[in-house]
Amino acid sequence: MKKSIHPDYHPVVFRDPGADYAFLSRSTIIGDKTVEWTDGNTYPVVDVDVSSASHPFYTGRNRVLDAAGRVERFNQRYGRS
Image 1: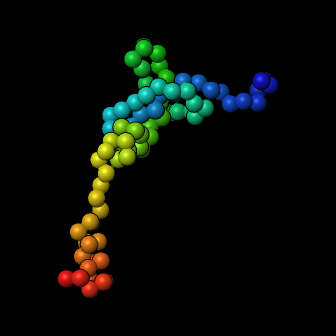
Image 2: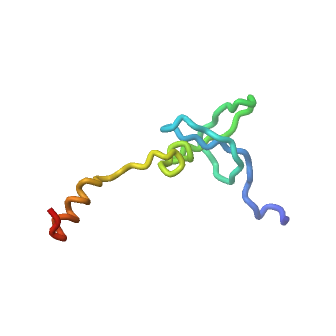
Image 3: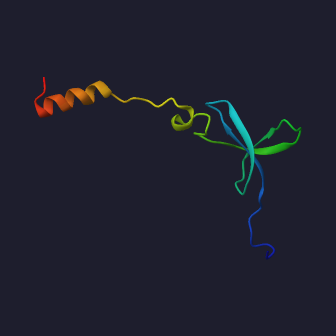
């Protein structure tokens, strides 16, 4: 690899505060805050909105949005009563 053309690739903690879940990975992103990880080292931390611990697809907690209203609209539109 050529020197000084690649970004710094370092360990970063990604944290989902809503699900109280964090994982250590490597990334080029730079976090403003730091956190002490379970191994005793301090790493930059990046807060994310959605992770595998909070995403409905991975947790199996899909939301049903107004299913009864959809059936009623279908019945009104096509004449079922």
